[in-house]
Length: 143
Ligand code: DQA
Image (tube, rainbow, N blue to C red; front, top):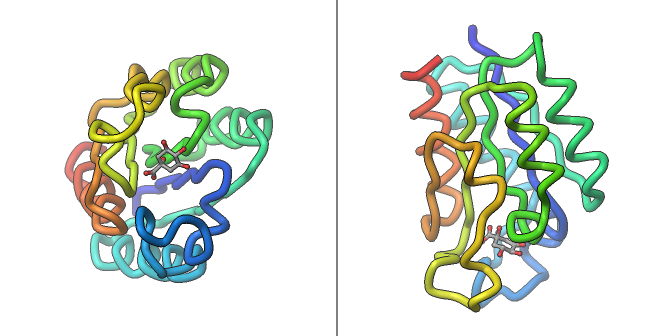
């Protein structure tokens, strides 16, 4: 079985509470259950990690080196600011897919830049939880 790390950034632990008109009413626990079921259907071994801290996200990506076969990442707000997360993804050089629940391309100007996306093979936006399934399915073929 291939090992995939799913990394979620700041405020995604607030799903269900935060801006439901944008992110929906399902919780972070619902997202974890969804990801685990999708991974199991694709015969992938999945490890999920969420943090509100940029450094912890960088460390989680670094620790994937030599252990994981691919990364699914929603860096949340750090998408638009973090060269450190971009550099960590480049450092481990694992196949990575960027996911955003919302259609970031239709939102504010400051969301139009994705640093992390520059190190990802694919970006999926605006599909809600299904974006994670699509990312896992891509990696299941790729790795
Ligand atoms: C997000 C989009 C980001 O712009 C935002 O800061 C988030 C969530 C998404 O999944 O749509 O926190 O990554």
